[in-house]
Amino acid sequence: MTENLKEQILQLGIAKENILFDEPMSKHTTFKVGGPAACYIKIDNEKDLRTILKFAKDNHIEVTILGNGSNVLVLDKGINGIVLNIRLNKIEMMNFGDKIYANVGAGVKISIFGHLLLKNALTGFEELAGIPGTIGGAVRMNAGAHGKEFKDIVNTVTCMDYDGNIKQFENKDMEFAYRRSMLKDKKYIVLEVGMQFQKGTEKEIKGKMDEYATYRKEKQPIEYPSAGSTFKRGSDYITAKLIDEAGLKGYHIGDAEVSNKHAGFIINKGDATAKDILELITYVENTIYEKFNKKIELEIEIIGEN
Image (cartoon, rainbow, N blue to C red):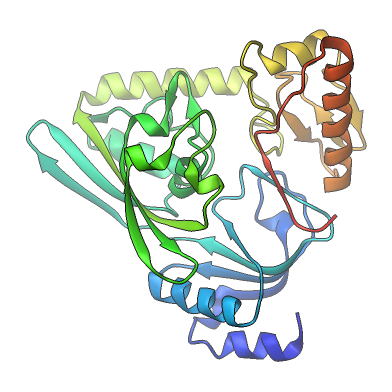
């Protein structure tokens, strides 16, 4: 990015402390890898989002949207454009009879929202509360755990298109499927999500959340940086089981390793590069295809320059 463009961005009226240039993406992804973003901007209001989208469009600059950085692998050369870190953190709760509706900003962390629901004795989110990431990112990919997905609790999704127009979608419009929604293909940025819950008891809700948290701690390598589950489940097979049967647990390239705890996770043992992780992903994909004639798919998204 030229110095002239940098200076123009600083004059857009966005708080200067929210704008970072040549910012290492390893600081902003749960894999702890990735080269620099030419420009990284923290977005905490719709006005700033609309402003930077117009600037990017006028100057033909590519925009990348990031939440908590928990489902992505940023490549080693980084991102040659503008990264917008969505931090819209509004939470609004409304009671209608026995149902409670919540309007939640896309930047709210799932863990924080889960604890708020627990505090208010609201049930329906326990299975999802341990997913690392933000509400917006989770809706975009229809994240799920323990048999529940975001599609099961979402009523409405309010988005902004890249021209700055706001549109609200109903659940049926979202085309939710396994680890995807229509937002994977269409250029909309999640602003706010409307969800519904019911009253429960704090004791029962906490019991379930603790149970799922214990499961996650025992079964998943949360002690190491990763992007969550690396591969999707197959239509007629469990990918992690095939990787295990292929003897790939513990296989590593550099500090990128197939987790010994859960074969569906690739982890960063310390100093892995995106190149290491990408090569390991390719090795796993090729091995599974050779041994089982199955073409496994990534659950994580790869972004940036290789």
